[in-house]
Image (cartoon, rainbow, N blue to C red; front, side, top):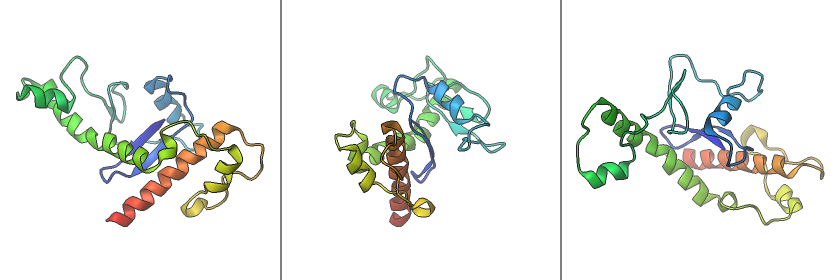
Length: 169
């Protein structure tokens, strides 16, 4: 799943439905296809931080490879950055930490996302609904593919997560 998060730990864009074995770059390419109705568009002059699984490109900034990156590496060494690449990676890691915290909170809050669902497909259909403007039943008939249902469950959890974040502030 590809997820885009803002500084307030709100999910701005999600693209569920990809297997875990798909490369990050492939999923990102798919999300930005112009023929997608729900394409992820990076506003001109804006950039999103990406993890090491992505490459630098228009609108995306990834860390330098083969250079200290993770906050744990910095804490254990108790050293200051030795060059511009290390300084960039340290600041990138600190800023991107909000993404990891958001997904951790999201998975903690929505236990259904941690493992493959053991609920019967009919039970999933009846318990999950779209939120905000999409307040209609997830499934209108009983012959929906399981993958489509799981994608809709993920999207519903994202919307509920954002709703809860709005109510906290």
